[in-house]
Length: 488
Image (cartoon, rainbow, N blue to C red; front, side, top):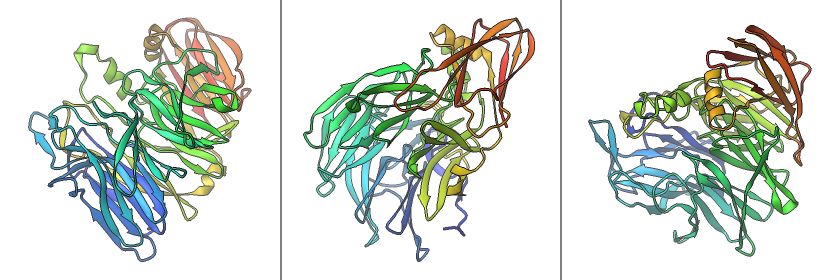
């Protein structure tokens, strides 16, 4: 594996812009991943070096496209279960549209002992513009010896499904859209909501022993300020809590322990900078994941929304960052390009898949994947090393738009490991900024608050007297201003 050069340039794969390398999973001596949008599953025997590829034609005729864009994978015994969605065959029209008549949601199983692939389950509504909910999460239920599938991205057949891993029979358990889930103690928590509109709205929890479902609402932000559109990216568990990584921060808690689901603001720039289309892995007892700079974006401005969606999805405020979560500490451990798509731990190393281009929209389909995708190998020790130098630059017109929607607080910048952090405000008028200081304490604590006067022009606010995480809020709008946050 260390000698291989996994780089994939633009190749045939009709879909919306670019997919990526998803589902990295090392299990029983086999490394698996799916290359999207080429719909190409890879299985590498690490000991022998033999590699097998599969084009998903058990679903239908080729040429296929798609694959997986949410890291839907699980491993049980000698089996790797991998899911997602595939066009079989793909239908591309020259007016830059994809037809969804042949789009299937699926779960396959790979036997690492025999090297065989089996289609376990598939679902399609065979509609030109709509599709059945994609499989975006596969959880193994060790009590019921079944797979739990989360399905949110789609138009029908959404919710959480139970899948018999031997017969392939599936049945719906709940019908509320759910993108991701995680196991905590003897419970499976699932994020519920419409991810591309309002974001996560709460959680549904399945008692794996009794089969009973409970519903839980979201609590307030630790900094006491409103937050907008917490779109769910991925979920993980540690410390007997469920962690939901969302646009603008993370939500953590466990109501069965008497703790609500509190919001910790983190990298909240009121853009689409988010932990989206990436997974989270447990390493060293904590959680490693990424916040991505450019994962989903509009390619052309749309006059119908005055270009707001284009601005929110294409304003690059900073690099994608790898983040290690070990409460009360949150630490940046890596800085990278447009987006990180999958992370896996293998033999003391970290495998990190990345992509240079985003997923785009329905009217912007291309006959080939538009991104350059690769796998980078890192050392596990990065979680203990000094964090990299990172800068974030935010036009204040975006915070002004957010303020009109009811939430103007931005930031959530983790300072752990930095000696000379500072914020530079370039303003067109005198103003005041409130700084909220908090950390990732469990149970959740409260933020300390301090306010500073700012003058028109350049203002340097040294942050070395703060610790943990800091977020900011200006007293007045400054639509032509800018803030730059430097971490050194």
